[in-house]
Image 1 (cartoon, one colour):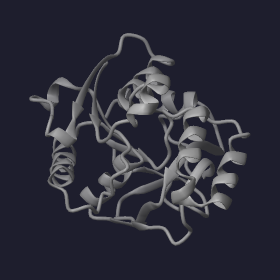
Image 2: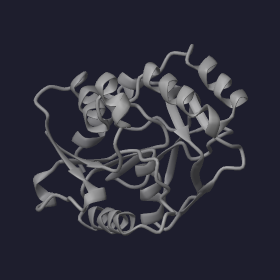
Image 3: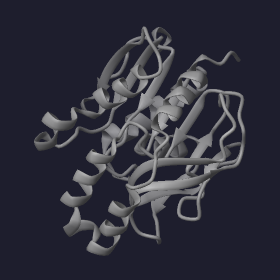
Image 4: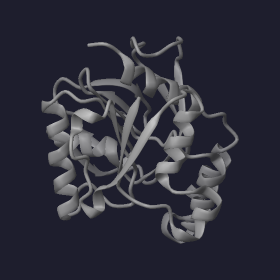
Length: 235
């Protein structure tokens, strides 16, 4: 399977030695459940995109510290490219920032949450048992790190998982687009490192809640299997 990663940010340099960069995290995650993957990386902040979208079976948009509402040319270009993938019916998986980009491309909206930062491990109720899930599961636990989230969902989108904190946590937009507010590619140590680094930004109380949540189990590998299943499903 050929997968194009649309990279929207970089792990901070001082952390890359221990954790790698975001494309490597995603590659390692997918390689843990599927063999023979051919993965290409395109830095969309630099305007890099595949020359021929038909060469790729799945696109994955990464997270970013940027806001999808920023007045940046590369974000406008990414929204346009996402619309192109929709028109041409290419498979796309959006992660965090990528989840929100799909919402904007589909006519929804994204805003800063009045609940504050979501950090640590988030527990979400699964509302729909889809055909790309290979087991019946009622809860999805993934690491999160966001202060913005989808505030208005366009018509036709199906919410797959939700929580009180994030009502549109996981969405299937049609037969081709799937997205999630969480980070299935992150591990607990990276989450912990980032939280401790952001104590001055987020606030001590919320940081401590986030650190405590890391005691929960996460469903990263299960989610990786769902990504592959979604990419392979026949339409």
